[in-house]
Length: 87
Image 1 (tube, rainbow, N blue to C red):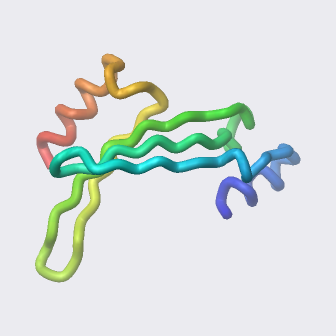
Image 2 (cartoon, one colour):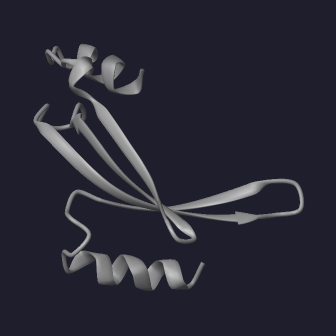
């Protein structure tokens, strides 16, 4: 919904059928890849890599997400993992 609304407001022709999400479990976390377009700036194809961590609270389940437009082996992931270690 958000991508469609933003794209329409910017007169971008976005093919929502090309969007895809793949999720897998990796030990105590989840990994996901999102194929979409960037409706906020360029309208160009965008691939996001995510790592999702969960923690049960007394009344809720908390979710912490690391998100970057690069593969898991890229240098920026070391910084993201350092941030996650403080959560």
